[in-house]
Length: 455
Image (cartoon, rainbow, N blue to C red; front, top):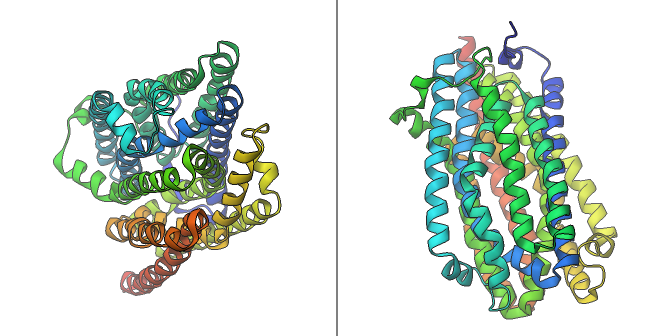
């Protein structure tokens, strides 16, 4: 009889080795998923054209809304699972898994219904022109119909990683990417289904992985598995998941509001082409951010487990290592984007010089502060990993609403489209500074907590 992998290694194996072992599979999976998003856009750009790219960019706020709720449950649940396991509360961890599953089903159905009923008004608010709106609706209709699948896949894959199975979680993501690429090639390039084909490929790929993930958690021999009694929503668990998950929720929600504001500003300053260029730049930025996200997700179970076990030296050690790795990644990304912006952006629509030029210009400005973005991303996730939901939420809101929104409103008044691009790195710099202040305060608290533990 095989037994699921125990997460107890999180409390005693060397921290750097753990971080590498937990991060590499996730980085590989996240980068692969990001590569798919880029290739998907390449298919759309070359088969549908620049307006197809603009349509995908317009749907980004709606995707962010779905991601906001999904992240709240997925990140909150996975963090709570890690903390429960660090406290040796296996029953509590199983209850969290069951509640995560039920909450994702309810949430997926709710968002699907609202999105389908009000799709056209929503897309109009998001900045879709009369030309772009029908294309965007073709894409979003199928994405919304598969919303439950998406939420379950993301939420349970996070739970799999946090329960000591980062390799399996990576394999599921890689499987999704592989199936997605094959189906996207068939649906977009061969069958000429355009944006509908891109959406259908995404949903079917996630469904294929979800089936295997459900089988994993249905296996009673796994360390963490489904229990019938755990499927009933429990107020304290729901409250814990939402409390911890409020940070990524606010981050995605604020991102949605900001993207709406940016899209509408782009429409005024540069039209559909400017919106398409922003979508292209955003995909490249997300590609590099996915590497840091992989590091963060590798850090999360280690930090959460050891925080629950009161091993504060190990918590601090994993934080330091994650910051070093993330900073190295973002500095290398900054150099690459500054040196080869046109070459990078020409992959999307090589025959459209206007789109390439506008995208390359935006990319060079957007990555100016990348050297400090890695630190900011790790520190924000760290607060969430140790259950400091309020602090993580503050950081999420500050970057988007306190810094970025005013800059998006003010800078274009003086510098036009260039000012709009400049708002992105300027907000990152201010956010990194505020994050550093909060992190210093938390590290001082750790020092005091270590002394109390020794006593």
